[in-house]
Length: 334
Image (cartoon, rainbow, N blue to C red; front, side):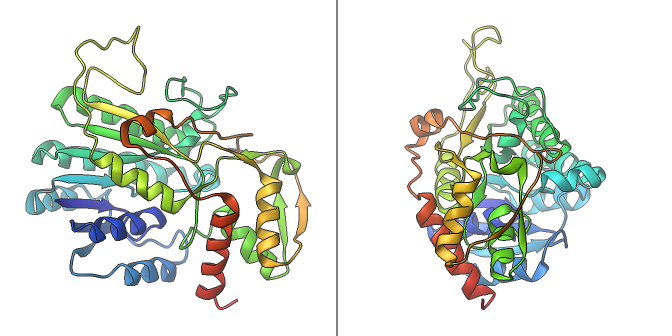
């Protein structure tokens, strides 16, 4: 089939492209290759996934006319929309970047799917939508009406926008709430990368909430497997569904939402210890209070995704950290 993958130079996007091309699909990738973080890392990802099945088009999903033209020319079967302005803390300082990429960009993709009758749109949501939820594990049946960052609010908005298009135009849409993805080729603004870099450079790492935090760390290989599998599970209308009795993760429209995580959170200090053990270096640590936009715990209930796809994460933290550290040391010659 012919796929559009947005955010193709990104951490998850490049890995999804690699998997889809290895499965024989034709991929058009879109990315604006912005400088939110190291452009050279993005270019290296693209170099790694070069093959005859993949073609990159450099453009911004917020460019309405360019996206409209792209859909009209290419006629995609399926779309995996991963492009977004990422980062919780960056959203506190640069809110307009999130409105442009995550809101305008998302509706441009929805419009492209509507006008060219795309068979399935899979898009990235985030575990951050759970916001102030204290009940664990986080379930897609839970309320997600209290986000604690603008980034989270844009992701919740993406789900609502997708539902309206599924309802009005019969576009099958599936949102995936990603939980703390890590692994080789990962983002420099995320904790595994920051911790590894600073420990190797002899710098002090910041430990938020004095180390009393839990995260459902999920290796990118497991994430990619889940994304590719769910692309084959196209939601359909359920005429028996009602707001009063149905889950908010499903609908009378061809719409679905899934958590995609490991389903077994670990303490932040345990994750730091795994990195220290792999590097053979004890980190210098600065313990500090909870930071704005942070949440105490993330923990994915993934039974629905397993039932739909057979998805079952297989990469444990020790194995995943070893894989990431090996890549980091080789890529940065550390």
